[in-house]
Amino acid sequence: MVKRVLGASLVGAAIVLFLAGCGGRPVIPSASEFVGEWVTSGPNDEIASLTIAGDGTFSYTGMPKGLFCAEGFDHRIWPEDWAEPDTSAGTWRLRHTDSTSLPLALNGNTAGCGATGQFTEIHDNIELTLIFGRLDEGSPQLSFHQRAE
Image 1 (cartoon, helix red, strand yellow):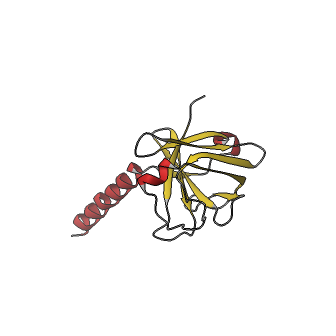
Image 2 (tube, rainbow, N blue to C red):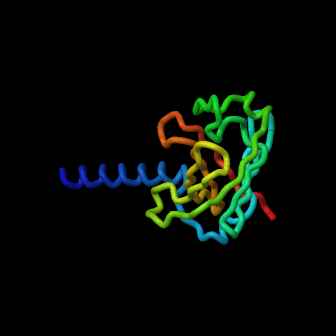
Image 3 (cartoon, one colour):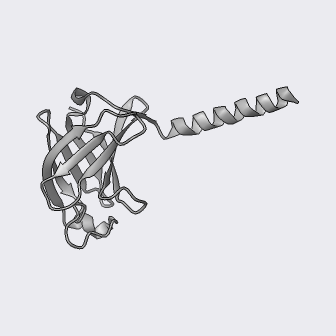
């Protein structure tokens, strides 16, 4: 009986670890690893760019309209929001906490919300997922990958 329970527990643990690995593992890269240009794409192959500079500043171009808590911010990204791209700039900081938190904080120069980010390593590549506005169930998210130099 003990062997059966132990065996089932080990199989269950292996499945959980495998499924967790499918989504990547959270990492906190050094600043030199994430400074540069990050890109994401919209529903009609629109490209939005986030440039993170080594001096603690960042800038966005081509972002879907309304992500920066402007008037009418409704916590959703609609396809038509990509047709009216928005820009923003501000400062970033890396919060040194455990790797399961959201270590990147972006504070924009636009009125309202900033964004927080999580770095995830997937197949030797780092992906950056940004969450805009309040950290609740309806907060819009975009996933970026670093543009190759």
